[in-house]
Amino acid sequence: MQPLSGILVLDFSTLLPGPLASLFLAEAGAEVIKIERPGMGDEMRTYEPRLGADSANFALLNRGKGSVTIDLKSPDALVRLTPLLKRADVLIEQFRPGVMERLGFGYEVARTINDQIIYCSISGFGQSGPRHDMAGHDLNYLALTGLLSFTADKSGAPSIPPALIADIAGGSYPTVMNVLLALIQRKQTGQGSRLDISMTDS
Image 1 (tube, rainbow, N blue to C red):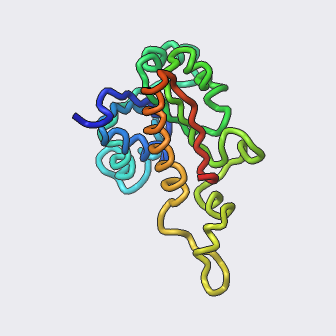
Image 2 (cartoon, rainbow, N blue to C red):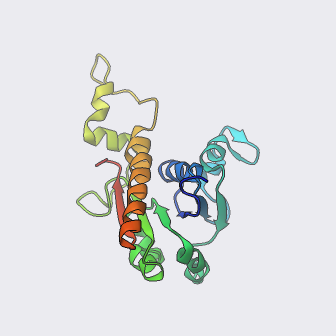
């Protein structure tokens, strides 16, 4: 038996940080269900190189996961998702702060449906603070923390790192660690929790 057998994770995330985190959880035995938009789903499905119908990146990051297509803007989206929310142990999302609330799936709504849910939000700058509503990418987070300066050449110009350091080390890994800690805490208290993962802070 794997350590996370019986744990259900709803993954609303796309691209790299959230999907890599939920992949680690899936490989430890959790059931992961991706919530994808109608049409193209996770945009990483369209990337090159291809592996069958989807991109190789998508196949690597989402192996072993289930998928449900729901238009989160549709009036019946919450009704359709409620049975899954009632069963879920963990919810992972990485929209801009406030988006899940506007869609009607914020933490307070999820907690009303299931007070044991561990609700994890991944963002560039956290859910609050002076930069919380700014858009950003891996290089922005590395530059703001000073890490990008370590890659400078002789002229002082930084070079592009060979890996998405902030996404992985600041997003995926802290998500996995904090979800596991929250599962232990829930076993002790019977209560779920709200996790705020800021890639820049991490």
